[in-house]
Image (cartoon, rainbow, N blue to C red; front, side, top):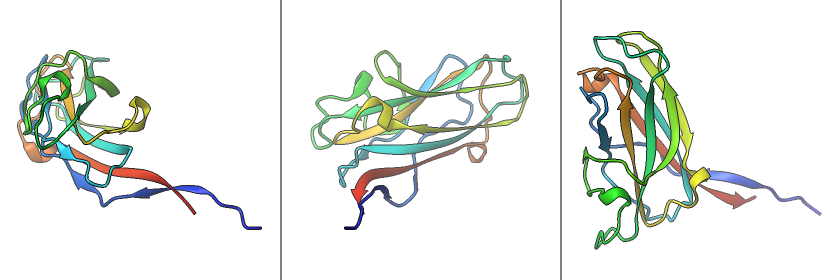
Length: 157
């Protein structure tokens, strides 16, 4: 009898529409919401966030949150009143999926990889928000930042 395994099946890699250039200290920005057409339960989020021209505070953070929506067609509910598109947001209830701890280094790329699965299923629509709590603004060059994701589901093999 052959044994079966549960392996991860992933969608194509994609990027978030999320403007991080010059994001001020104490501010947060949300990505454009993604419709979960394949009904994936989770996603791996990969970020590169680059500090600005002034060094951030040693040990401070860039915080990453999961946003969910219940219905892309009506947008009756989205975490923290998120909109459909890339915009400023105030984080109050969103689930923290990860933190990037920074060093006091100007113009340095900091990396983070986060699994949304720790907070439960993605739901019908989802996105992320990034809050800058580093003490300084982020790099003013949008190309200095990378915001990627790949959705996944467990599949019997």
